[in-house]
View 1: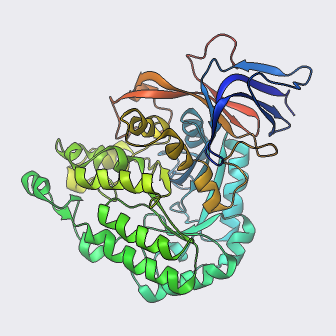
View 2: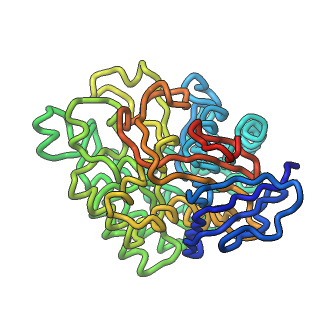
Length: 437
């Protein structure tokens, strides 16, 4: 139990209701006890007061795609270091992908992750369980037991199931438990040895390309199977304008379809690969500027529902390689909000849309009670300055790995405070006098 906290003089934004007004938030017993317009009212004796000084109070971010090294590769990232990075980036809950050693494909492993995170992590860690044994795409796992153990979703993480028959069986089985299935649409035979977006730049760079059809063909298949089985389907991450068109059409037919996108594909394009910097080797690859503009439009229109970090820590040995031989992936928990705010500052996406895609919409998909500012909801929230200037530098990274796609980037917007269940889990070094410490 901690003393009540009142955050006053704030701009309170709740994407779930569209609220955006000056006000105050009262936290008590780990939950939101009150939200008022203007000055705080009914503040309990002994409450700790935080003067937000006009900064934004919003629900904590929910990141739907995070990889860590624990268990099995703790030298890349532990649950504790990932949680510290998350708290600094305003992420108060993240979905842990099952790509660990051993794979999270058994109820006992789900239970282990929950207990380990409860003991070591400062934010909420939500384990997703494997769709297939060992992520091999051959044999289905026990979905009911995984759900009972605490898994919030089913996914094969980085892997994509290639068999339409097996995927149909997985969707039908998951439908029995009403569990969301998060699936990466990727056709291996079209990806082949590709390492970047197929096009003129790949040819000039001497690198093998990956066509957009490697994403759209399996996505079209997934959407048809989702309609057939009525499963709660979430396209793990999309990167092309053609995928947006497929999703828009599918959403006109069903409300049980959703999709996510990496902040990397919203913020960067294939031109960033030109210097052969392996931190920009990602899956799906960075696409053309036309595709980037199309997915931004898809986010605004609602064809794309969520934004995630795709946080994927990789050590120096697998990244300090020739581009074609380096591993995919970049970290992103600490830069998720700041990178997303670039789209707000550029006038491309409204602030409410950006926040909704990282708070209330992920909560709806996963069936969580967080992701909103409402009396009785968990006090998972953040205070952030949308204009705070900073530069991403390697020494400032909290993640155990350093493979960020934003190294040296100038950001505008930073988290000042993060709270999980009413507990302060992060305070920025630039916190002004009178704020929480």
